[in-house]
Image 1: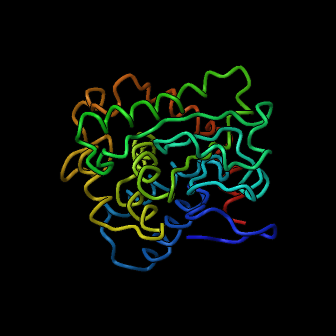
Image 2 (image 1 turned 30 degrees about the vertical axis):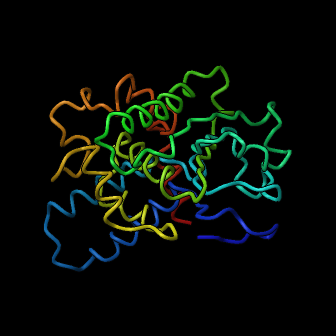
Length: 250
């Protein structure tokens, strides 16, 4: 999904993840108004809407490979860039503004090309996911928390590696699987069967939320991950909820 800014084309499948989730949930809420939706589905929408009010738009960005014309302003002014490609030569194509270590911190969390990324039940895939989540959670303990977001996560297409790690991250934040799936399918070239496979491997067949798991602390992809710390890296405090919700409605 290539989009354009006033400064030029954005990377493939570039988008603000939290803004996309909010827009998707708003669409669901509008469809439910005046309809005969079940009370359980309506309650789920309310819970998801409340949770999304804790997420500040612009804090989490996803996309494909960055190129020399993608300066920092164009792609959302990231303070952290996480490269998921196996080869680290991706950074050779970065715009100079992204290589300024005073403003941007670079991380490389490679997934081997031989891995089937959507097979999240695989031990090696789970280990890679956990590594990515630990990297993000540790940002919350930074001495300068205001410089740890936005976080930009990218791979080659912004769909496969990025899609799997984003799905795991959103599940850990408490987002419902159906909403995660809808967000994933915004990517060019995405297929429903792949994200279904990934989500089932992460939380089990028939489950829709991480809270459905009997013991989430034993999930392989959360090994060594402090979920509360992970959430602190991306969620706003309760006192900021109304401010975020008001801005999102504008």
